Image (cartoon, rainbow, N blue to C red):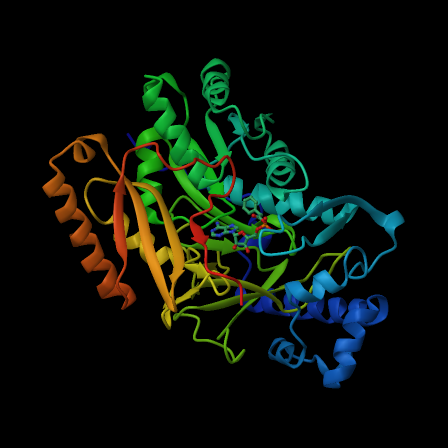
Length: 441
Ligand code: DLL
């Protein structure tokens, strides 16, 4: 029971619907300021500029951004904790850190002005996805070093919604609170939303017992099939939003009610798309790695930050009236890519195949191991009860069918194992889908 599309609305029309020429002029002015700021206040980046022989006066057009060196997560790790800061600590009013799932975490700081800009860009995507001051918003992101909880919190307060900072965990209580408080809007990761939807059914709560209307899901990749699942189970209208702590947290981009790409707040973040292998510009319509430059951040300005996230960019004015470029859903991370027997495998490809098969549930795990010299790929996926308790022969046929489809897409053989519903561990935050048991080289 999906809720109907909310009325389109725009929080900040002056910037979100800016004429493209005016936007480019503003971006250039801001870019030049950022480069000067880095040269003057961040010795680490100054050194990187010196190595390639570029100075702030070399940046005369937006295309000149290509003369500047990239910034990587590794650079930020080398700057741990405060070397990347362009302001003294006395100007910093908040510190967060990335989750550190791919190594040592990175530290990010915000000045008062940064917090204000952050609040503002979050308010933009919340309004774009249908939030209004009449909503009661349930936030199930954790509040802590992770930017999700606090980021969404202040943005939603700015919109004027009644914010309930429930934080993560105690899932049955989450549902009870949504019922008792009449929550109309929900914020969490998409995988947690799937789990809440499942729990609502298990507890015998009907979607109509909940007043949910809109949901804002982000912080991890999710497909449109998962969107359908969430919308149906929780009875709401779901939009995607994207961000990363190094750049600001949530608020880099978010979908509007047309659910057709995430609008990037381009007056704050300048996007480029590159080929992750050659680092040359990629065709925006074909997929590439998203590279972001912060245009307004004071505490940690970043130039050409390599996000590792793979997407496409969609230019042109959207039906909602916003003029800025949209990014597609993230279809993988360049460092998420598994190399199995020489083939490149993205978890999102596996998900797409699995969820296309009738009877599968959106809970799966990819296990890679090594037997002798050979990599083995096993894919475990839960199937709904009616399928699981079907004849053994039918289950085996279904396994072979999925194996065949996977081989067509991935180019390698896998072993598919159908498992009982509710077997795999559910996550309250970002789901962990890949278990790589191969010895580290
Ligand atoms: O996940 C910030 C965030 C919080 C975004 C809440 C949206 C909502 P990090 O923990 O630093 O920050 O992780 C950033 O998460 O590089 C992507 O790989 C992934 N990610 C974030 N949003 C999406 C999304 C937050 N909508 C990393 N789709 C990013 C796919 C996403 N991946």
